[in-house]
Length: 168
Image 1 (cartoon, rainbow, N blue to C red):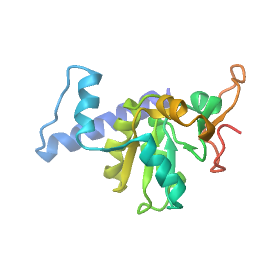
Image 2: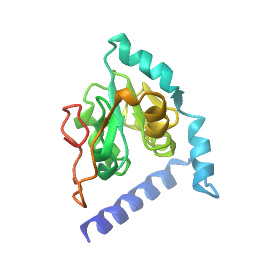
Image 3: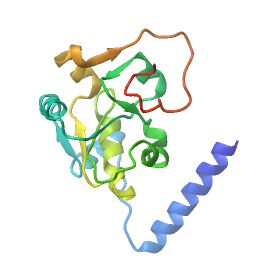
């Protein structure tokens, strides 16, 4: 019930704020259209280019925006889990230095594109999406994947601690 009330209040505030801003709100006929439009505003990096970043010693945050249950089964080594649904609220605790680059991924890429498109609104300017998400990464670089067997129906309700491990 608290979540519904919070959602309704948030939606109301957003509607009021955008209605008073004079900005036109763009609408889309499908989620696919929304994702394609968001791609125009985000930077996408190939898995190979991100592997080079990993090997370079450059400081960065690697954010997995899948749900905790997905993350617990496996992730790119070193990833931190901040699910798309709570990203705007929890990213600053996970990635406090807003000048450090963020590389973000999900299962295939759509959630990561949407996540990357909102991060500039909370002052993260250097955000890149790993093309093809976890599925493509796992195909190309299985040695850089940390996998865990599914643990029944046990799901974490909060992001993993910044230990760099998936669900462990």
